[in-house]
Image 1 (cartoon, rainbow, N blue to C red):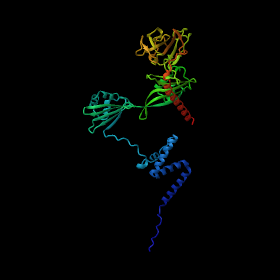
Image 2 (cartoon, rainbow, N blue to C red; image 1 turned 120 degrees about the vertical axis):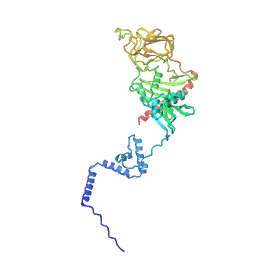
Image 3 (cartoon, one colour; image 1 turned 135 degrees about the vertical axis):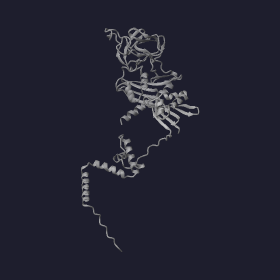
Image 4 (cartoon, rainbow, N blue to C red; image 1 turned 90 degrees about the horizontal axis):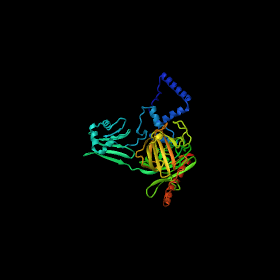
Length: 472
């Protein structure tokens, strides 16, 4: 048997051996000098490159789970690889596939309305001639609604292979979409209105600045904040009574489409704590279909007069029999209360009554005087103007807007001068005890309690749950 001679190891030039020794020495020095964290980072990157795609996906999911658990952003290790070596080929399994989108037709086009856009410019952007705009608008009377564009609105076009418009679609609100579809006679217009589902929502807030800011921070809309002020406006003077630390709880109707809140309904129940005193209100609709707010035990929240005729105004001058007039510069009784507010702020009638005057009255400027039954009379001066329909000899309802803050007559700035008379005698409207309205009728008391008690219990439960979670 012939034995093959063993192969000698390859011989390298001496210069190559010296270079290899130098590289080995440098690597050993690097391991001694660089911090362990840097070495670990490099190890992580190298190990990721060597791991199987399944192992990579598992690590990526662990990182995502850690993000959700700690609320701290975690960068995907795949991003580290891509950033460190852009030329490294990536396999299809290296990252999760993006969510599949609904395929669009070849003729589908989308445009977003920008500043200065018209329907003609939008048609041009998708390659449609100006003549097609006229054809669309003339096809149906309602088609003109497509020309009422809003900034940021999206229009979706469908074109046939010849480049002609077959349909035009746009979402005009969270609940409404409009569509034009081509047919033998031109284009047919269609409006689809989604019917919201109604659910109840709860908010709690603590006032640490203004009511409007604190309510917005708690998640209450401006309109619901105004409604809450109206509900409690008979007992709480929102111009001067609000204090830091006051609290409110509100349960209201919320309108929802596809899981998204698109609007609100009325306040169903509310609680407001002002200066340590708590007021509670429940909305109740009687058998005749009339709705109003009552206390939890059935007394009406509505008085004969609202406490403040201007929402969220600042009292600039109180009732006084010895005030120095700011313009006449002499002592003159101030038989009312001045509410300073921006010009144009709405002024509300304090109660139902007959309008004795809606016009000019000397130093009061534009003035409204209302007679409430035989006993009470209120005056509103320095108005910028009168609300539509308010005129001498007419009637107004409590809370109805009768005019707007101005500075007519003897006035140094925009404000309302408000007077309150009882049997012809001026009284301080801030200190006047207001008469009560009728409570729940005895025949409806059981029905009222069946509605109000669950709402009260819900507010108590929601608040207790919220406070318990905040202490964890």
